[in-house]
Amino acid sequence: MKIRVRLSLLFVLCSTASLLVCGFLLLRASAKGMIRSVEDNAVSELGMLKTSFASAASKTLDAGASDSLRRSVLVYVFQSYADDTFSASQYVLKRGGETFYNNSGYAPDVLLDGLEQNTVTWQGEKLFAAVTEIDLNRETYQIYLIRNVTDLYDSIDRLRLQFYVICAAAVLLSAALILWATARTLRPLKTLEKEAAAMARGEYHARIPLPKRSSKPGDEIATVSESFNRMAAAVEQHIDAVTAVAEERKMLIGALTHEMKTPMTAIIGYADLLERAKLSEAQREEAVSFIHREAQRLERLTQKMMRLITLTDGEGIALQAVSARQLFSMAEKTLETVAVRHGAALRYVENGESFSADPDLVVGVLINLVDNACAAGAKHVTVAAGENRLSVADDGCGIPQAILDKVTQPFFRADKARSRRGGHAGLGLALAARVAELHRARLVIESAEGKGTTVSLVFDP
Image (cartoon, rainbow, N blue to C red; front, side, top):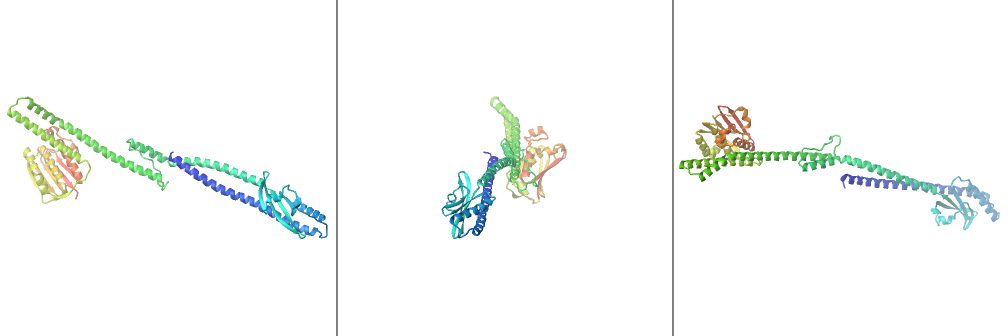
């Protein structure tokens, strides 16, 4: 059963129960009040009759009169007062077991059943009976009042029926209104269900429309909707980030596959040549040298690729205080080999500077920058430390301004032919930019075409 149906049923049951209880108590109190009013009125009427009859009878009766005469006088006087009443009451005058007057047709003793007043159902009619006593000439008489109150009880029954009809109409109307109000109030939950289903299908852009805060302060459903929207935004942002990383890795792996084709083809070709053809010693040495050189290129390529992929995980790095002299010492042998291979002069400049960094990552950046400088035809390369920065400056061919903002993209190369000959895949500056980002630093590139390039790793002070 849906929540709006359950809530509506709960509201209807509660309102119906409240209405029935309140109506029942009100009807009961009203009926009791009406019955009590009629009974009190009848009792008052009986009292007035008693007083009037006693006064008239005491003046009329003669103590010396015979018993039959006194009886006739009493009946006459009582009948005259009983007939003068304008109510629907009927009266009975008795003395002991003898009845002097009875215009009701009922046996009052049976109706009262030993009580002073009583309401009974007799032959399908509601009758109210009451009795009082009067002393006349040292004799006690009983005066009975009998009133048919069937109309009163019929009125109460009609009132009760009207209440039931009104109650049923009110319940039906309130049920319809509650169903409408509940459906309208819970409409955002229906939207929430649809958007949750959309998120399960991979659609993260939809949001639940929110009411104005000023119009519905403290609305729990609006609060839930707002929380869902924040969650959906966070999920969408996370999915976008994961998708971006996945796309980047897909691009990197695809580019790596593409980059590996040429050296792998050459290695397979030379290996097949060594296996099948008879070569001179010089040719064999040349083939082996080529295979070795291409294998080294593949090794460098895969190492840089794996390093770049690893650094896209967003994990933090452990920083430690390290001096520029220590960094230069760690990179010195590799840098010298690179410089000698390209016939470049290498110079170090430092004045006791120190940095908070990951030494291995920063040394890798310096090696990549020097390798790029030598590949660009530089004959003089300077590795320098300054205030909050490490830089590699060269006098190579420089980078055109039109592509200066693209050189940190993975696999971007200004001169593809030269990069392939040098074993470069265009990952060095991309890796350096990622390392700078992990250090909360900036990779600043300054270059002039034909004059050289300076690449600096600038740390935040």
